[in-house]
Amino acid sequence: MKKNSYIVFTLVCAAFLLFVSGVGAQGMGDRNTASNGPDSGRYAIAGKVIMPDGLPAKNVKVSYTSTSGASGSIQSDDQGTFRISNIPSGNYTVNVKVEGLPTATESLTISREGTLGQAETVVLYLRNEGQKKGDFSANPLFKDVPKDAMSKYQKAKTGSDLKAALVLLDEAIAIYPQFAMAHYEKGLLYQKQSDLDNAMISFQKAIAAKPDFIDAKMSYGMTLIGMKNYELAASVFQDVMKQKNDVPASYYNFGIAMLGMNKVDIAEKAFKYALSLKGGESLASAHKYLGMIYVQRKQKADAITELEKYLELMPKAGDADKIKTTIEDLKKQG
Image 1 (tube, rainbow, N blue to C red):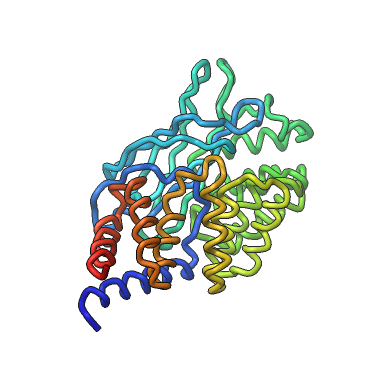
Image 2: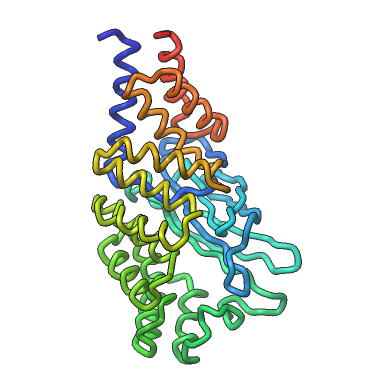
């Protein structure tokens, strides 16, 4: 085998090992920069911004900084979701400023010991002027929650100790077992600890309490991908598609699940459709996955087009040099 062909073959194998290793995550807004470092580009933050009335904060600027030196900004999509990709491990601060509202800030830690490519999840709740952090009284999601359960939830959200927060959420759920948001927050906390089994159980309970809870379904599906349960993950994202057919992230993640099941043709269609939807054009990773699919099929022109789109969206991605090498080799092969 020629050297150039060997390089391409190696990259293709590596890419598809990534597909089936359970590191897929919901993917909105991959347009961001990453600092250089030994683990640069290996991690991600998947998040959502919520307005005081409980509706998604559409097309708002999300900024992030890290003690490792990574920083930048990104825009949420029409569902209020965003994804900060190709970043190193470290302590992060994520904030959102919307005119007329106080800045919403959340902190999180991405551990170097975490699963490669695993996305940490964060939810930022915007508040009205004068509204205290942890006061969700204006959000209809909390309308029927008893005051005692709400108080426990608010303390869990404003504290910094993960174990203490889990205890408080359990106490809130004991008061109000149908507290969907408390189950959901538990799932997010378990994700932060890389405890996927308990995260999965918590998301299941959130969905049982609120069957139309799309965010919980998306997180549940992502967790299943992390556990390599691709078949069940695919069914979860199909359910999201039926409930709301214009969420690019659901088609993107469905494509990841299909790749895990080695159903490459279906994955290709899913990635293409995700990119065609409003807000999906910034799904850089979908272009990369399509490019690698075309490399495997020896559709060189298509592969070059998709990989170049990926680099256009993410010129400083952690794997940018490898992708450039693949493009150069494809061009040399004519």
